[in-house]
Length: 173
Image (cartoon, rainbow, N blue to C red; front, side, top):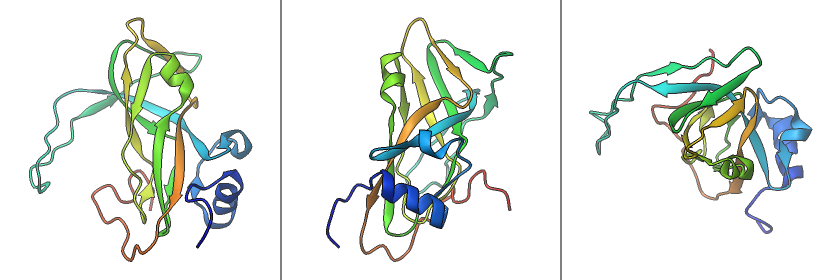
């Protein structure tokens, strides 16, 4: 297999349309980028307590969260702090791809960042990420705003896909 390891707009579009790589998007043409796909904001949650992480996951405990409500015009007005965000889009990553996400530059320029994990080969679900508002004046985010760009890279030799606790998260059925 020769060529770029990073998928381009045309390759992503073909996988979305023919194989359901991404579902639940708002506008395919707007969200497709030259080398990625913009994920949009569905929900913002505030953290209510601490979580726990250990080596074996035997004592793993996710913190409780509570969804915040946007104002009457669909805006979340977020002071400095940490938030859990949930995306509108669900993904179905095939065994020959891995996805990595980055904050969109506008989010960074507004004084916020989005911390993400790797979307492993075989992962299916509607993911969440960590939004950190650094700006002392806060940030306003409108529901459905494009906040994160998902990049897809080719990977070889994966025989068994993701089987972790978050497989099929927020998917019905």
